[in-house]
Amino acid sequence: MGVSMLQIDLLGSAISGALVVLFGAGYALLFAFSQLKKSKGMLASSFASYLCLVIAINYLLNALQMSGWGIGLIWFVILGYFLGPIFIWYLTLQTHSEDLNNE
Image (tube, rainbow, N blue to C red; front, side, top):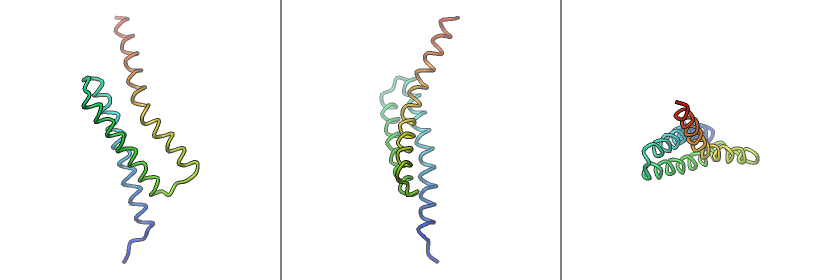
């Protein structure tokens, strides 16, 4: 009883998809904590987590055998994963600074 390539691709896409979620959450959390604690080490760790996210997405692309516009869409998602936590952090700063000024 052998394992088919379809089963290997399915397992690979499930594992890499889970890694995308974990590394994406890790990047966002580490980035937020690095800003709260003003820690360069945590900031470096957040970017390392982002690099692992990009690697996991690359494996996901290969496992799903994506091509054409699908790859472009994934690069757009990668950019969103990078910019999202940064924009949310600065939005939070602006929101809370307005709250402190109104009190």
